[in-house]
Length: 98
Image 1 (cartoon, rainbow, N blue to C red):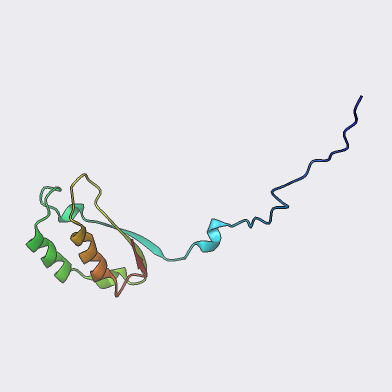
Image 2 (cartoon, rainbow, N blue to C red):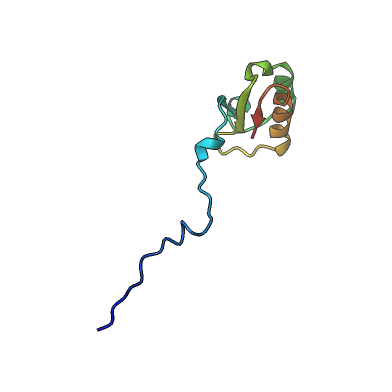
């Protein structure tokens, strides 16, 4: 009969891996979702002239120090420039825009 003297070795503990806690990376602040959907005609069509007028006249200062996510919550196809236009308007006020 063969005796085993091998003990269980915790290879993970001995590997030098560092454990990260995602909470350590959380930045405090208000999160805001900016939805383009209400700006669309019949919730599917973006009219450039009306959209640019909205961006020019909207009070972007209300997003001061917010983390803002820009989205469209329906299946409308939105040109990339529309998201970029909103992000540019938010840039002086929001902490971060995605």
